Image (cartoon, rainbow, N blue to C red; front, side):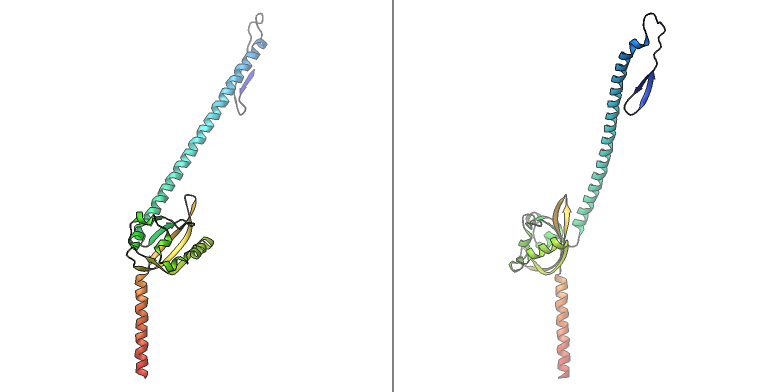
Length: 212
């Protein structure tokens, strides 16, 4: 009796029966049968190995498909939020300040085409006297991870100064670090604040005149 097995499993037996003892014995067939069994076992083992590789490839393919689908959904969600936002959004290179991406609200704020903005650096959107402040503000964002910045202005293509409020944060996009900058036009708030101050001064003048 010869066992037929691979290194991992037993898959059968060969039983040798010699009925004619005058012409041959079972021992005469053993070397040949052992070689046959060894070859068969090697082929079966190779087949099992290939099946395992194929199963692994199928699992990896399925996982890749799932991840790709999640990334597509995430990218779609990102672009939807990016374009539907009420504020101007810029994606910036943290070293050069190059504008890597921006939404239509940014183009509207700057009075420029998106294509034009993508050829510019963030510093070019600020008046000259504010540009010297930007390196320190960028360093603050890098070190803290995020920062709220107010009191700055953007210089539109028509040379109109727009007061802005900026929320900036470090993000990872496709394995690369970038600064996500959300810029809000605070012109309305600035006007309201100015009017409130004027109203307060007017009221104080009336009270002062009444007490004179």
